[in-house]
Image (cartoon, each protein chain N blue to C red):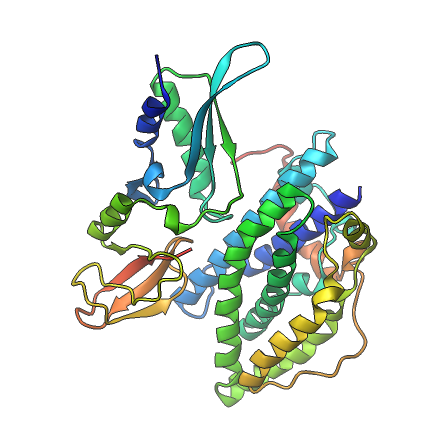
Length: 158
Length: 248
């Protein structure tokens, strides 16, 4: 009998195509997984996801990857539903996700409202400067460390 | 009918400005700002997609986000005239983005409390992105306005050019009035004063003179556009008009 945990485990294998160290569970965009029953008495899985940014091109790809992962596991009785509200926030990112980001060289987001300086993921210095509020993807800003002089991406607090 | 027009108006605003800004892709003054303006384009086009998808679902007759964007002619577009004007120089682009972001912020803030749950959800989502757009563009307005003689002059010139198009933002169209009555939409004239005081504060810091309030251009919300919209649509719709149903 397949349970919610099995589905979640499958979803954990789906990575953000632009940040391949993060799974979609780490990112906090999977809002719920539940078994729903349809009018004809049969059941299906409903996977509710929420987008990070409205224009993020990775979202369509993530939906496709969820589909592929489910098919690969032999499951066809499911639907993917997009939910906009409540709007995604980086506060939903898991602690292990933040640790993975840092190890990957990207400064993870603070909790919203936390004003402490962004820490350089390379040397740990908090003597850092924002070069541009918009980085290589919608979710990142471009920073530079004033101590080790390395540029780095910061996953914006959102 | 009113709801679909209201959604189309909001969607067209986002799509047309998103398209205009995307013309900077590969042409920005420096790499970081090229990336910034195209990121803003992506956000705006993403917002327009949610609104078109919702509009298509209530329009029926096989409408889709693509048919609404690619198969309507200029007369059916309901965007603000300000957003279809050519991008001109970086100063003009930034200034328009700032004026519109400040407006969109107030509009989305109010729409979060819309009686229509789906529209409220779209507004809640878009609001977070719009606050970045506002911050980034206001900083640029200040930097260029209070910059060199040339940048100041260009910004002042842009402000004079765009000002007659700002009045339209606050003139409610019939579909807006009807949506206000049902609790779904918001009356843009209700936040005109707040918009004026916020923009004025930024212009003061940017050492720019705000032009006197005078005669306003209008008509975009009723489908009467400047000649510029036709050129945007000619480029944007070319593929679907020439090869109907073509996919990438």
